[in-house]
Length: 594
Image (cartoon, rainbow, N blue to C red; front, side):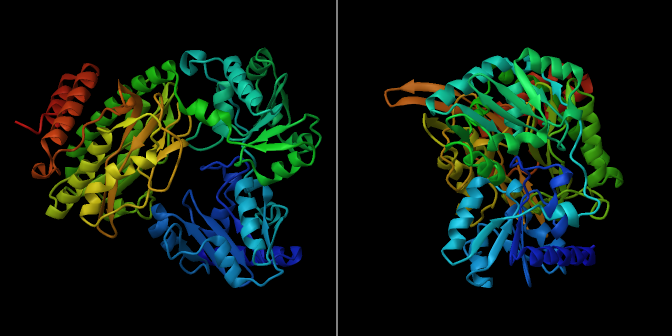
């Protein structure tokens, strides 16, 4: 495979010479700025061999580099070996940016190529400014992989489906009215929605075009009088066509969007900075453009009462599946026959038995011992290992249900642990509890809370490189913005109705990884003379393994929080379990304090 990657890079360099460009940038995204993309747009994976979900490859005439974040440092180092592509560990102080590196390896007057369809406007304009200061020119060229990638997968042709209002909570027409109100405030008469989860949310439709993400490939253009869905016509069923007609939505071919933007006759069109660069150029050729974040991002992030109720119901069913899995695992591992892949299959089966199950929300991370230190590890037949009755299994998983999306991590004790493992497990737990217990004033963003989860690790000289929390979509993408909890500044305030994860971790390369994660809901707390305060309510219902806890490291308040959480888990889930399962859960959730 490494030899094949080198051949692909050589073919790209031939394309570059023919176009007169000295470097070509290959991001991980698609024309919709998605985190996870259809196979058709997995060009960065094809050219580099690196399979992680995040990363950017840069190929020059003589060199190659790949930038990715700490979740993938170990994986990328292994997959890039002997390909001629160097790993650049993104976000570390000593790592140059792509623009800085290009300035160091290219000469003034040389051209850097991008495919404008898969680069956002914000990224393209920032890169252009950075490169031009050194005399380098950024140019948008045709997609090279259209010709170089001989067996390239076609665009997905799966048909979308309607999500009933009993699950969505708000009608499509009401959502369109909210978007149009935003257009008036921004003095725009048209808006292009290109993010797939935003389109799915707006239309109360879902799809199967992207693995684990229930969305469908399309664009949506909204004006005060018309709505047009750009979608491949083969994807439309009579039922969906009728539904769209009832909502006053017309359809056009997915491939018509660039031409239509070039001929738009409105006075002003609103685009998101995440709009791809090709469509930005098309829009600016016909009308003034206002660049503002899509209003749908925040509308979608604040869940309505029906969606919140759905989350609660989905978490109950998911909790039942998790309890049955944990009860099975503790015994099954003793046989010496279970592996990372087999426990993944078992958990899928138990979730699939639950009502309204639609699939998993991301590929399960089942990392035993050293594999747990690879933050986004995914077992394969080549890496799969047998679980032993010792050490730790890090299990990060989730499901899609018609009424909600789940995301949960538990680090499970399989047998004897070292004192170091117990200490690290408890440090993670202390940070997890501290964030779970947070109360904060209106206007607080996730960055201001991030330290709560890290404070105990920092005192021990430990840190983790990923964010502490991300939004979770409602039967949509498991990673949702615009709010997050992380060290780097994300200004979006946390508001009641937002879902967000809490997932601190410790990863010791070659030894083990530990992470504990719940999905939480932001809810009102109280109002004082100092203003309105909010807090978090746990949505996830699943016991946290007590066997690894050093109780001497916990305060009384931390112990009480864990006991109260476990009491709630038992009270809510036990009526849905058999007598044997209830007995197991009773022990798993029994109080730490006696």
